[in-house]
Length: 143
Image (cartoon, rainbow, N blue to C red; front, side, top):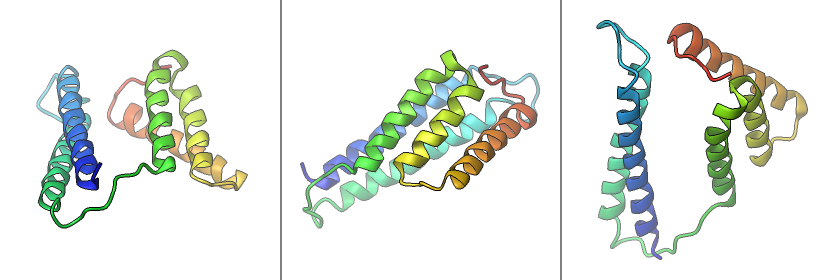
């Protein structure tokens, strides 16, 4: 398969995911006209839709110039598998258990071996996401 076909399929998948996220975030609603729980997910969904569309346009436009073959990077594949597992495990295991495990596994799969850095990034990511979503945006986290 030529690389522009793979890039086109991936860009289209990002746009579709963005549209699905937009529809899912619409159910959060808002009680007032102020920023509520649906605004941040909708912003991310809109970003996915727009960036996927831009990448799709660029891949199709480049199809005659670039004839290299499509290949999958193993780090990217591991990241995708870990992210999918995280999404499916977080409702069952809860945010405070699954998020640090996911963060450690992802950092190790990316080649980080310094235990202090891995621990600090894991704790920092968990705390920042907690403060951002739970405290600032008032989005309940699965526990």
